[in-house]
Every structure is written in structure tokens, then in C-alpha cells.
Image (cartoon, rainbow, N blue to C red; front, side, top):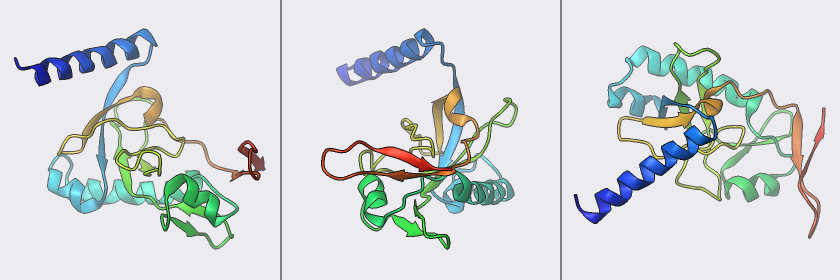
Length: 170
């Protein structure tokens, strides 16, 4: 075993140990950036890929972070990575979706995003980062990451220089 393999094995073992120590179990989930990538991976059939993508799109409008101003959304998700809704809020673009196993209780398909802080990793609507994804879309995620995200009823707002972020609305 070369040094790179030893390092990978050590890191994977450490990750599993940390999750186990925290009492967090993991589940396999599938993540894709499009219906086509889901179909091409060959893990799910084409109809399932389409149906689950549609579910994630519908959920996106309910659970995506909402911003009162364009620049606030751009700050978190990057320039031109947000859209204005008909109600005037700014939402990040949905850039992927996660299909979690249906045999677990409380597990849902959900939209995924890429933040400007972690542009090469997916994040959920509740800002949980998704780890490394294999070519076929498989990834291991904490069980808490695959539950249905809460519906957003608040808008993310920020003050001026030196102010703290807060949520308001209802």
C-alpha cells in the first residue's frame, strides 16, 4: 500500500470514527446535477430520475434560502447564481438534487446548492455540506442530512459593516 492509499484509509477511518463518536449514523444517498447525469449513472431508472428531480424542484421553492436583496444572495452563492422570485425574494439556483433511500423513515429527495464558500461541494437547503461524490452519484451522508428540510418562512438579512447576520419575517 503506498502512502496515498494509507492516508485515504486513515482519513476514511477517522471520519467514520468521528461520526460514530458523535452518535451520527450515515446512509448512502445519490446526488446528481441533472436528470441526464442520474440516467447515465445507471443506478436508478430514467422515470425515477425524472420524478425525483421534479420533486426536488418543487421543494426548492419552499426550502431554499430566501434573501431580501440580490447582493446578499450573491455573497453566499456567488455572482449570477441567484434568481428573483415573483414575490420579490432572491433564491440561489438549484444546481443538483439528492435522492435518499426510501426504506428509511423520514428520508426525502431534496434540492442541492453550491455556495461561494464551498463551490466544489453540494450543500443542502439547511446549509449541510455533502461529502465526496463517486462517479455514479453515490455518497455517504449523515442521517440528519437526508431528512426533509424545513419550509422557509424567513428571509436572510444582513446589516452594514460589522453587523451580524440575522433572520426576520414570519
